[in-house]
Amino acid sequence: MSAAGTVAGLDAGELDRFVTSVLAEDLGEGGDVTSAITVPAHARLKAEIATRQPIVLAGVVLAEAFFRHADPGVHIERLREDGDRLEAGTPILRLEGAGRAMLTAERSALNTLQHLSGIATLTRTYADAIEGTGCQLLDTRKTVPGLRVVEKYAARTGGAHNHRMRLDDGILIKDNHVAIVGSIEEAVRSAKAANTGLELQVEVDRIDQIEPALAAGAERLLCDNMPPAVLREAVALVAGRVPIEASGGVRLDTIRAIAETGVDFVSVGRITQSAPAADIGLDYAMAEVVSEAC
Image 1 (cartoon, rainbow, N blue to C red):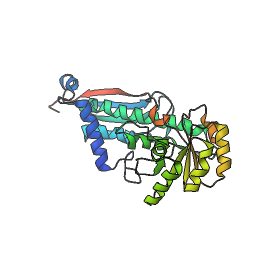
Image 2 (image 1 turned 180 degrees about the vertical axis):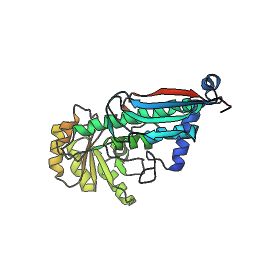
Image 3 (image 1 turned 90 degrees about the vertical axis):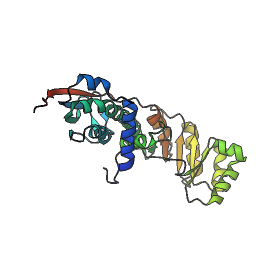
Image 4 (image 1 turned 60 degrees about the horizontal axis):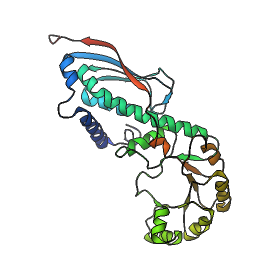
């Protein structure tokens, strides 16, 4: 558990439900048929999980949870921690336990570790690209359905700050809201009148929308799909009155120029939406079959 009493953002109950549902998806009705009919019941395996590429590690405790669920007596030696930058070939976990159980948990553990480490690794690349600018990297709600909490944990591990976790985390008036109510001013007035206590952010995609949004009471701006030259103009116009976030189509080759315009934040959907799985493997270094008589 982390200092906040969670594992990858999940409390104890959520962790149990996550592990149980992921394993159930893989096991189906009949369980691991192949292992059951080929691996002796008393076989014990030793294994090592290692990365095959440079990564930022994320999800190691989640991976452990799958093995512990399948075999409560499994021995696990954790060699690295989430957030560590690892070179190719670095061992992450060493395990010893019931052979059938380890084989049953292997895919779910690896899938999770590969996916979250992939997000953390890509996020770190983006965070490094804007280091020294004073601009903070944000993630978005562009996550795999059902995996938002753990994916945003991985983004945090890689160096991003979480934006809204859910729709109730803050008010973000976007172009569709404005189109429905008729104007930015009316949308902001309605939001202010609700007196929710939540930060009120307004999306703008043109310079001429900024002053109306601020005059109506916007507490933060999201400048959508503005090129760096226009962002610099927006920063100068706002002059520190509210924080500014840049968003929309941000890529690794463009994020530095965006951050250098003076915006406070830049949000990147790609770090969760498009991160490739990290190449992490599990190899059985030694297998031993213990006879039933023993």
